[in-house]
Each structure stands twice: as C-alpha cells, then as structure tokens.
Image (tube, rainbow, N blue to C red; front, side, top):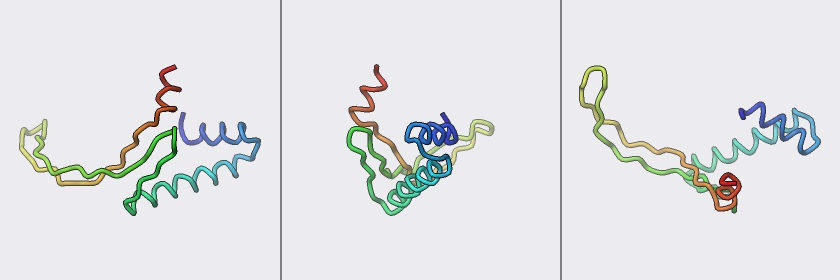
Length: 91
C-alpha cells in the first residue's frame, strides 16, 4: 500500500473526501517528522513508537574498489511496533 492507496482507504473508511483524507495524512506525518527532528519520541499505545537513534561512526568498504572508508556518525529514525500491532500481523 502506498500513500495514495492509504489516502483512498482512509477516505472510504471514514466517509470523507479524498482532499480531507490527504490533508489529515499530511498533517499527521508532518507532526511526527517535527517531533522526531526535535528529538522527541512519538508513541501510539498498542500501535508502536517512533524515535531517533544515534548510529556510531564505523569502518566500511567500497565493494567496487575495496577501499576502506569511514562512515560518519548519524541519527536515524526507528519504528518499534507495539504489542497489538504485532499480534494483528501474526494472525
């Protein structure tokens, strides 16, 4: 399911227009993005949580040339599913 499929499903499920569903989806994603960018954790009880984790600097190798490089430290967003979501997916 891509973003457009999700918007269509949301509009149909909630009985609203696609433009409203698109605006709601964009607002939710923007709020999650802003919270993560400011270092906050976003948690939906039962569904899961989004957080930012620090990834340490590490030594990597270019497979084409065999040259060793240093990948810089970075921050990455991570999603951890909640119990209810895990159970729903498991069947």
